[in-house]
Amino acid sequence: MIFNHAVAIGLIKLNPTENIQLPKYQAKVEEIESQDEEIKFLEKGELARFLKLTDSEGLEMDSLVFTTLSYTGLRIGELLALKWADFNEDKGTLRVTKTLYNPRNNIKEYQLLTPKTFGSIRTIRIDENLVKMLKRHKLKQKRNKIKKRFYLCR
Image 1 (tube, rainbow, N blue to C red):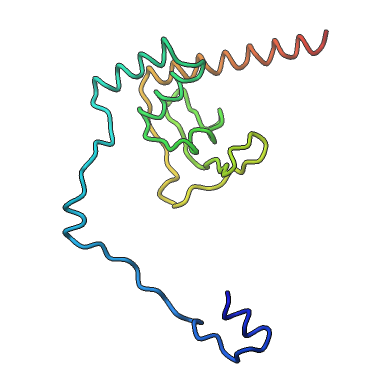
Image 2 (tube, rainbow, N blue to C red):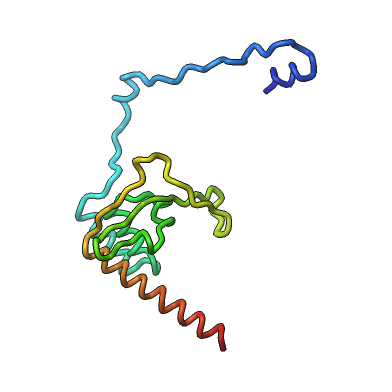
């Protein structure tokens, strides 16, 4: 930026850094081998305990959110972008075609974007337990909408 500015104000004729590519950092084998491997997943029993805890002690949506994330492998942005049209209860599938982008964590300023790669667009089979949970949530949403309309009309 400094060299571009110097060219713009006439201090130099050419930017000596133009068209320069910095080499990518290549990690050494010793660096990779010396890193401690940390466990980045829960064992089956740990996951079962965690999901049971979210159901009994968590917030209203915790059980559904964490069960969906753990059973499907969805990214959080993909989960938040799902619409009911993406859920096929007869086939037991979720269709992933978009992701929610919200860099400022603002409830009003977000974007729905396509996934980063074409391979991220996919249909995921879900088990009967998750289908039941999603159907219960859909019914609860409908009831809440009806209640809201009733109170607004009074």
